[in-house]
Image (cartoon, rainbow, N blue to C red; front, side):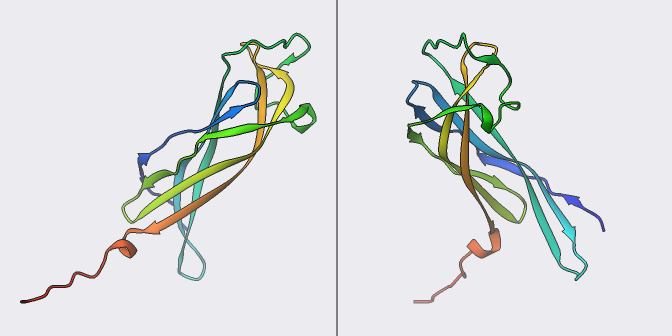
Length: 152
């Protein structure tokens, strides 16, 4: 069985933005990294999508992180949580990608944000979050309306 990696282009890709009670700005997006079509045993095609979660925290406020350990966000776990933080949604977007046959829409929504006992190399506290997401694939052919002509 041969996998086929399908080319895609980005129509829109942007960050969701959340203002955290600490004064930090959390920017998050879930991006498309791969589209794969593979024939299945029953003769039909199955597809899979590769996605990657990407986030940035902007800190314009000073924090006392002298008791925090240096770490990277990939090494921080649930056991490092200090407390759940309140936040406000500033902007949520739907990222849109296009293949020859489909439009792919991806969106994520932050559910919870946690302050951890870790800091990054800039001495800013590392935030963790939980999120939900949706992925919707729409066939382009389903969008075209029947062309009707009338004679008057």
